[in-house]
Image 1 (tube, rainbow, N blue to C red):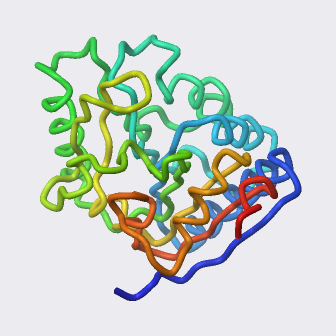
Image 2 (spheres, helix red, strand yellow; image 1 turned 90 degrees about the vertical axis):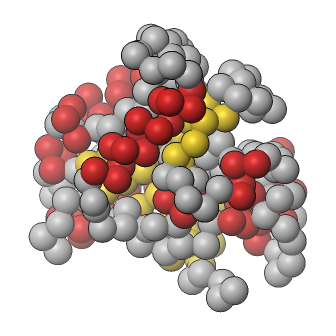
Length: 243
C-alpha cells in the first residue's frame, strides 16, 4: 500500500498548536471557496478540538463565507441531544453559531432521543444522509487520536475496523464512556482530499509513534487505517516526544 503524502507540524505547547490550526482552517476554507466549491469538512471532538473551535471564532475570517461551508461529524456520542457528552454542543456554542454557519449545512449525527430504534438504526440514517448528498470527497477530515491509537470511534480490535461496505456504523461497547456511539467508517473517512490529525499531550506520544511507524497493524493502532488524502499531523512537543 502506498503511504499518503504526509507532513508534521510541531509546536511547543497545545496553545500554539490550537492557534496554528485555527488560522490554517480559515485559510483552507477560503482557498476551497476561491476554487468555486462549497467546502466539505468533517469535524472531531476532544479537548484540543474544542480549543481550536474557540479560537477559530476569534480569527479574522472575512475571506470565508461561513454560510457556504458544509460540516459533518466523524463520530458522535449516542446520548440525548442536550447532553454535555455531545461533541456538537460545544462546537455549536463556541464556533459554528458564533461565525454564522448556516444551520442547514451542519449535519449532526442523531441523538438517542430522536426517532431511531437503536444506535445501529441511527447510524444507518446518518449513512443515508451522507450518501444522499452524492458528494465529492471531503475537503478536510479532522481527527483526534486516542492514547490507544483510535480515531473517530474506531477502536483497537473492534469489528468496526473491518467494515468496508457501510458509510457509518454504530458502536455499543466503546472502551471509554459513553458506550454507544456513531462513527464514520474507514472508507468514508478516507474519501477526502486532506486529513488533519490534532494531537496534544504526552499521553498520546506512544500512539503517535505507532501511527507513524513504518510497520504496525490497523487492529492495534486504528489511526493506521486512515490512508486517504494528504495527511498533516499537528503535534505539540509532548505528543511528538517519541518520534
